[in-house]
Image 1 (cartoon, rainbow, N blue to C red):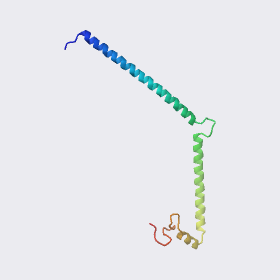
Image 2: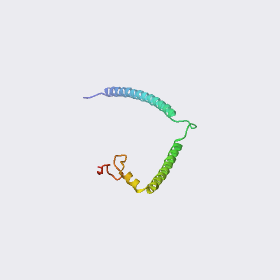
Image 3: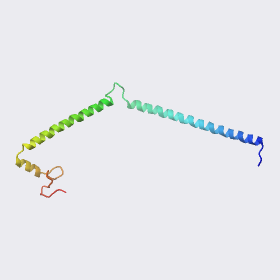
Image 4: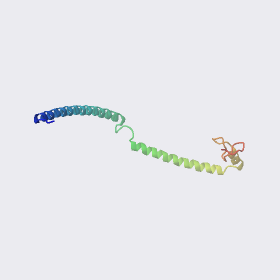
Length: 123
């Protein structure tokens, strides 16, 4: 299968033509993808612009978080005061009231000592 140099050159030229056609197709595809990416970037920019408040509008995220932390801290202090006051009130109750409270059904239907109103142990 001897091929002449002119046949080899013809095959090389045909291969180069195929490569150039492939390169053109790749370049066109890349240009199309670049246009799509530009459109997506523009749309994302619009979304981000709409979601981001102007500097002068409303508190910043840091200010919101600081306010939230402050409020949680204030609530914790208030709950501790309520707990202390409840404990001191319980200490000053008469014994018959304490017994009645222990036997009274709680939120789950059981008394605070874990027994149902009939005296059975809660399961």
